[in-house]
Amino acid sequence: MIRDATGSRGTVLQGGRQKAYRPLPADERRRAFEAGLAAYERGDFFEAHEILEPAWMGTDDIAERDLYQGLIKLAAAYVHGVRGNPAGIARNLVGARERLAAAVGTGAEASSGVDVAALVASIDDRLARLAADPSDGSVEAPALPRRAG
Image (tube, rainbow, N blue to C red; front, side, top):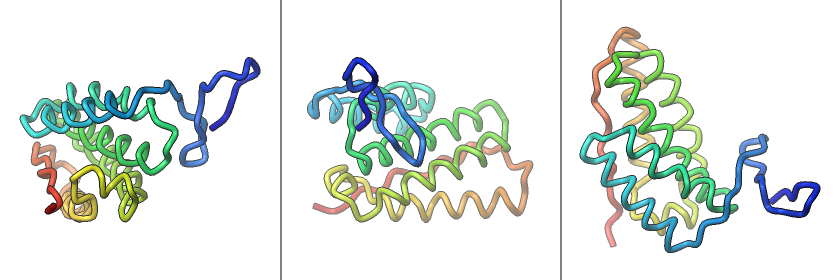
């Protein structure tokens, strides 16, 4: 965590860049996480993105931030899909994949209930289809696979 000149907790170094940090209690982050997943699963990708953002900015745990930001970018990819923008899908899927891959095997993944490794594999499949047909703007958002237990 980085403190600004006044000593307040305002940014976190994530992925080599300063990112906003607005502390949010764990129970509120969890509620936002669950609500964001529910919005994604019903196909409301813009709402999922918006709901997850405070959870992402609300923690200074890098693995948790990677998980949330990856899901935000995944939802953003399909906002572009709804708009018929395959380049936007691809760009956001690449970012989602990077962040989610960083969360694989972490405590954040374990406590999330999401099988993040399987989700990354689904993203890889979609990216391969986009590479084969860059004009494919179909909205085929991957399911959020759940971990047993």
